[in-house]
Amino acid sequence: MLAKDGEKLQKGGARKRRHPAEDGGRAEWKKKKNRGEEGKEGQKPQGDGGRKRLDALSVGYFRRVGERLNEGFEEDEEREMFVGNVLAEVKGKAGLVATDRTGSITLQRLLPLSSPDQVGEVLAELGGESGVGLREVSCDRCGGHVVESALRQMSRWEEFSQKDPFKEEEEEEEERTGMLESQVLSLSQVVKDNVSEFIRHVHGSHVVRTLLHVLAGCVGPPRTEAQPGAKEHRAAPQLTDFEIPTSFWYELKSLTETLMENINLSVTDGAASAVFQTMLTVCHRKRPKLCKQLLKRTMEYLTSRSSAPGVSPLLVFLKDQASSRLIETVIQLSHKPLLRDLYKNHFKGSLVDLALHPIANFPVQRLTAASAEHKLFPKLFDELVQGVEAVLAAGHMGVIVQLAESCAESGEKQDDMMRCLLNAFHCAEPGSRHVCCLPLFMSLLTYEMYYQTDATEGSTQKEVPLTSICYHGSRLVQALAKFKERSHLLSSLRTLSPADLLTMASDPSGSHVLQALITTSSDKGRGKILKRLEGQYVQMACSRLGSRVLEAAWNSASVSQRQSIAQELVPSESKLRSDQFARHVWAKFGLSHFVHRRAHWQEIQTGESKKRKLFSDLLE
Image 1 (cartoon, one colour):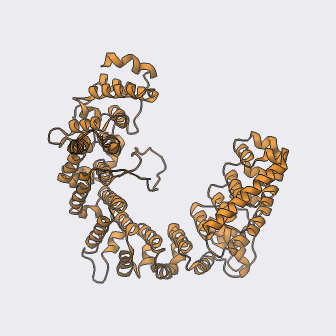
Image 2: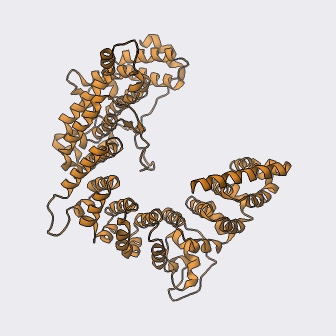
Image 3: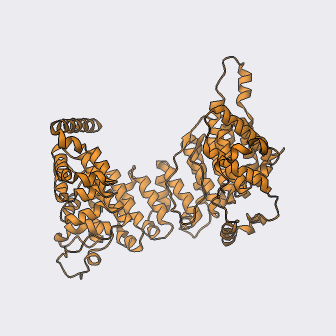
């Protein structure tokens, strides 16, 4: 095999592909040592100590396979032959290949190109006759990725199980229950037999989470290793639904039952907590009735623990890193009666204290968001608003932002929220300070701190340039921009100098604020803002962020407002057309037409304006 494919594989050279975890396991071992995981029920650390390794010749082969995969295939037949040949080389040593860094990466890329039966055969070899081999591979830092990749191929099951009209019904049904399906069920049984070990294992828990997705019939993007220094994105992954075999319907119920028997681990272990969060999330998406039962049982467990008389046991769990994440998920997925019960029996009277806690403030944010659609929100707001200034002082800005966003979504308590913020930032009295609110909100600084003035002074130091715009300040103003009454914000915006507006437009956080205020204003209000921006359009167009704000303003502007923008941009044609950002503005605004065929340009813009107004009326 090596001789046969050697020449073809060597096209890409012999560059070494580096796996994200290719650090000899030292970082992983250090992390586990700190967590004390190596002491859990005799569980061994994830090092390579004493196990068999893939020989150097095979490692080189799989590295060349990876390079060949980079080149792609012109024909399906060529790809199928290549995949078959490589899998033939894997046969007999799948465990060694899966747990090797290079072999693992190559297998993860090869399995999506394989048929479900071929994937099933790989899993069958990894599991052995009884399937217990899957336990060791799933809990390996490299092997776990291979098992996850194999499970994800179940999403292609329907493609290979289309009914053939020339086949009998029984034969068709038997073919549908293929090798991959049986191996997924086998893995699920292994997980159920060793559930305590799996859900607490740093790698095995990820396999269980992928298994839950597959049994439910939805998969997200593949998991990737975290890079040192990389920014963590906590946004929920986009899930793709797919049809599942009937057996998976029953197996998911069985697996969730086994997990619920070990729910005690979800409040003591971070990895186990993540498994339970995944279980609830996928069931909410695919099995709502089952999810409702699981939520009820989860809350029954959490609220049944012993605590001090008159104190909810949930308050203890809310302040714990692992269990608070689980409670966040429960809140997000809860139906109206459960939310009402949560607030009435556990959160009521403790909201401000919880909002001040470094961990418990996150479940408070989730509860605030979930209550926006219900009559519960005004009660929650009235309690939480009492501690706004203390929460700001504690630095838990997410609570304040979420409170404002829920006010915008529910349409209630908006005036109270604005009044509370003006007081918290010390710009409510005297009334002349109202026009200073926008820079204070964006920077999350009180009037005295921003203008470096004494509390007794009443004059505003308007010469202070706009410099500090923070992320949460930007989010807060964007939420306030959705309020029915925005006069304070717009009045404050009109007092900013053109230089400050340019600073806003070119700032990563400020640009979103300016865009929100422009696009949510009436034609008259938008005209006043654009009037203040005159003289800055060229610089905005040449800015990465400013050009996006300018495009958003253009899309919401009237024909006369667009004409004013175009007239200012056209004299700088050479600068705009040579700039990497402004050249897109020039093309999108049709400024060449504006210069050479003004009447045609006017006709196009008028047509677009009418279309936009028509769609706006339909949406309303």
